[in-house]
Length: 478
Ligand code: NAD
Image 1: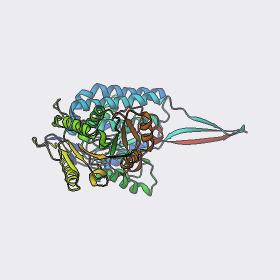
Image 2: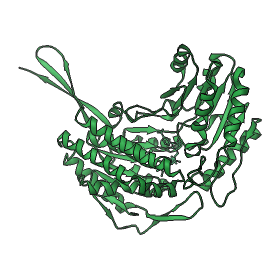
Image 3: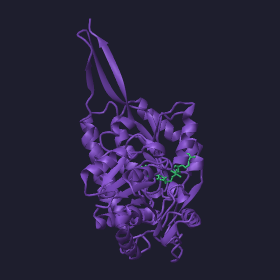
Image 4: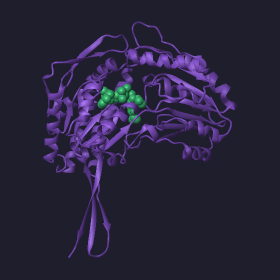
């Protein structure tokens, strides 16, 4: 287990001599202590990134060679996925199967961008017989990337892979609650002999190290995945320097279920959308259901019965459906939201409280019915296994409830009528809309937020324009 910061192509001994305990959310055991980077480590990381960028190592590299390097990272991620999933599960709480899926997902990201590396084409734009213009895609420079704990491996890959093929150099801060597994990238980058300085991994608390990173004068771009509150703070801290920020933030995603929906499909999608993977700690979790009364009884009966059969437990038990919340603080937060739901008059159908087993941060899958669309549990991101159910009469009312929060990340529509699905998708304010399913995803598909869920796009070809900027060269021919 490597517990040091990765700077300029190698893991380095701690200068700050401070470290962070990493706690297993299933039992409160300390998994390990990881080095905390402070001023000197941060300066070293930025100076390595700046030097590699100024030397144009990635920008001038043959695209075919760059593509091969990216492919070799994908291969290594697959080689290590079984052994490192055990570490990820311990620090993050997810099931081993989900952790393996995360490493596989990260490998797929590197494969996708390996394939795209030598296919990025520039544009030639005509402007009369005596001139021509061409437009190239250029990196920002030193890209600071900050990621959250809920999918630390796949989000690391998502931020880093596309950024590198454009030619940025990176300083990245993994989440303090789940930092260890991210060091696999340092190990792999060294093993496949990636150029030094293009990736630097800096560990630390957001409130301390995160702030110092954001304030560093060498930053040319910030890529932030995390909460809307922290994103807003980052925007304020970077405003005077006019640093471009790419923001992937929280959500309060709603599924609209029409009377002609396939109920079993809607119920199965709800279970996987909010309870099963990662106990609802997912930015695009289905945290709201807006359903027509005609089919509500059948949906609620089936949802209740399936919810009751879910097994709550630790991630190393292969029978577990609902894994622990990341921290005791998060457990308390989810618990407080449920109390506020009851106080607001919502009808608590199931759960609403901690699940007592050992020392784990377990929370019962929770269903609230007849929720006031303006109440706190209807408006705020809970980030746990809690769903709020609302009724609607008209299609316009369903859209109005779906769009009534500050967020706009994902959404869903369940109907057998394609016209109605399109009408609904056209009106929902969100970056991703699923029809008759939840979590249909792929590395070639773009995603991102509307409103306070952020801006910029990740995934697919679209993300090139969130991690790079265009430059136009206009030439007069004499
Ligand atoms: P968070 O905002 O608390 O922390 C995210 C990262 O920011 C961590 O690495 C943290 O150390 C760092 N950080 C915290 N305060 C900072 C500061 N003042 N300056 C700089 N860095 C700071 O979020 P979290 O609790 O780790 O993650 C959950 C949130 O992330 C949820 O809102 C979730 O919806 C969101 N999320 C969004 C996506 C997406 O793609 N849209 C994906 C995953 C998670």
